[in-house]
Amino acid sequence: MVNKPTDTIASFAKGLRVIEAFSADTPRLTITEVAAQTGLDRATARRCLLTLHHEGYADYDGKFFALTPRVLRLGLAALSSMPLPQVVQPWLDQLSETIGQSCSVSILEGDEIVYIARAAQKRLMSIGLMPGSRLPAHCTSMGRVLLAALPEPEARALLEQTDLSPRTPQSLANVPDLLGALATIRQQGYALVDQEVEPGLRSLAIPVLNHRDQTVAALNIGTAATAADPQTIVHDYLPALLQVQDSLKRVLN
Image 1: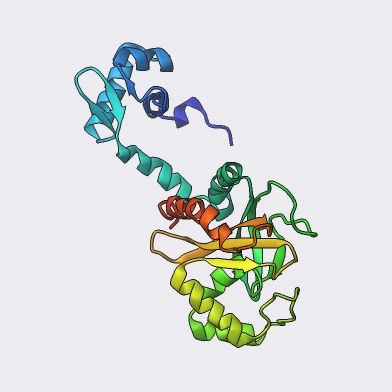
Image 2 (image 1 turned 90 degrees about the vertical axis):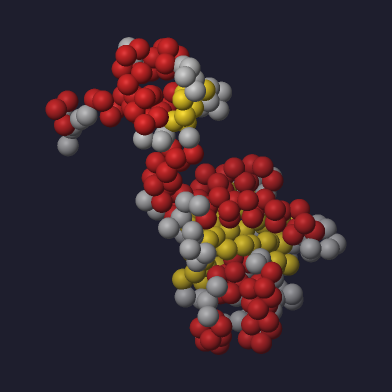
């Protein structure tokens, strides 16, 4: 369906153009500057800016206008209405670029995790991972984060009906050991898995939380197991993961 001119509100469109005129490079603008950037006449730009000021979306000191934090509500409302993979992907891309490691987000489905978003720097595993890929939950860092978010009886029941055959010599392969690992994850807030999925692969995961502190997914980074101390990955990457966790928590319902 093609919108006809009579189906749109021109003044609303002009107001959006005024909001978009502000940026990190131009956080404070005069009426004349806004008019020049938007192509609007000065009177129209003035009315739009004063409306934003009246509604609390802009500050005004008599010369310069600047957007207030209230305008973030518009972006957050849009983000919260998007499917989870679309919401997390930009954060994953930025995180991966910043730390130079592959990052993923997954959800729990039965006794497996399902990848819903991924930003890859280099291939560490023998299998290629992409959205839709599945791995056993019990031996992956994201899987353990998601299992730890379940009530303990539910996690126990799921593990008891899971094939716990070890994938490597370092894999935890019995229910008591795994329940102990989940208890530690609940206490410390992250899961560290050292070469339990595949030799040479080490991963760190944290929960993806919504604004009600509910776990909706898991976020991890994967690295080569080069350092002698597995805790090195926690020291190096946990702060960056927690920053993403905090950002996502603000936008997820």
